[in-house]
Length: 223
Image (cartoon, rainbow, N blue to C red; front, side, top):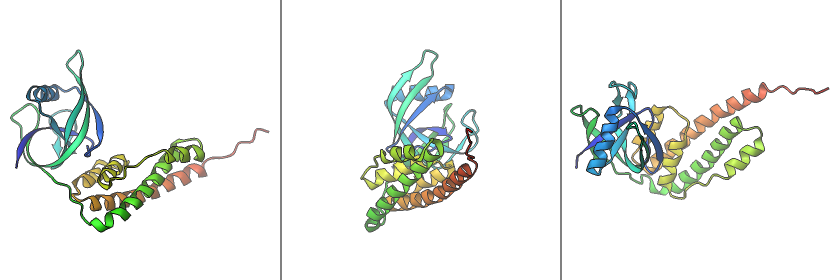
């Protein structure tokens, strides 16, 4: 069944189950939030395919995520600070410009399990690869390998494969187009497989960056 939903185009991807903080400053999106408050509804977040967040030139991707409002702070000048959480994915069937903000006719998408038998192994390998990826990122930023290892060890990953797939997808430091591909994947097994491929690819880049950094560290004698 199709429904109409206010749409908020952003230069990022909101994934189901994942939180996000939003600052609403443009008047048209202030109006959107006020309308949502009055009607007791929410809005959808769609990543921008072309254009920019400010102005009226944003053309969004077809697949987005419903944003459930968990916290709302109205500032004295009419701006809003929101904390939202991603809910259901949806596909935009058509767009309307009858309001000051985008409104889409959308239908909600259902996640499938995909290759059920492959999910446990994919989840295990994805968790292992993600912990190594997180350690590499921290190693790149931290002073010592020991600190990076301690911080990586403190990460607790969910047991639920679907939640794991979305958490990893949201945590990857990759461009919007590749994050969008992960959002558009319908199956848990397919998303885990894509996450695993992305983690392996990004880990190669991290290793190269770490090698270049270590190559340029020159010991200094105090004598």
